[in-house]
Length: 355
Ligand code: PMP
Image 1 (cartoon, rainbow, N blue to C red):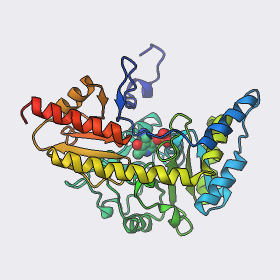
Image 2: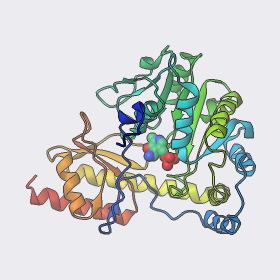
Image 3: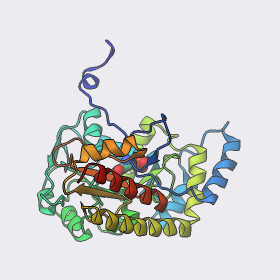
């Protein structure tokens, strides 16, 4: 900490992204990236856009907004693209929370929410998940706060039914409810269909997972035009050129290749099922994940030990050294051969440990 740091910074605990080590080649199953290459159309458009990097990108992202809105069945004024969905989530904290309106989210969820709150000086309440890691919708009724719910949730992978989300929206008519759908394309049900009915709903999604574009940083928010206008005010007050030319072009490219995205999502779901079955044979229990990751606990081997042994043998998964989570591994669904290697390695570890 420098002697110049302000009060808020000195108490800030920053978000820790999943490790990206370079010491050797790992099978990376720790950051929920896609095992597939980006769409050819995305790569081609990005390469073309790279030829005009002397010019600023379109701050209004007109073409991308129009195409995205069309895909969502919305008007262009009801969507806003951002630098990853992390940025739209941060914008939402900035726009819809203040001293009178704190934030509310589950105690076990995306670890960036408390950091967004802290960095913006926003108070927050964490509502415990039920013992089976599900959300009880009524815990979120009448909160007088801005509500953030990842659906499906992370790192549990469990989805909240749309009917519960609708109840939360109805029971917070004067507050914004943000539904973070980073993983919705792997078997979840999007709340975008509820946007015409609820002016207090903001849905966020990302191109990082199902569209294989984590490296391009593209996400978006969808909601009532007044909410989107507020978020635009934040965007133009922080970084009007938040989407670079190559990312914008790649976004348009991948949106014109929806078949490719759908096929990849289907494969991920199939590989997820295969891996869950194999893990179960080895003595793991898993939550009901509708995402591109598996949340698994072994009936006798500890989570930390398994994480460390896998790492030593060249496989990275995510382990959270926190109450209720420390016995679990969060395992990204990668390519089938990588999951086969994972199963083989876990089986070896368990044999060696005699468990
Ligand atoms: N929400 C959740 C629940 C996530 O797990 C992630 C990925 N770390 C994000 C949002 C942000 O993803 P991105 O910024 O890559 O769109």
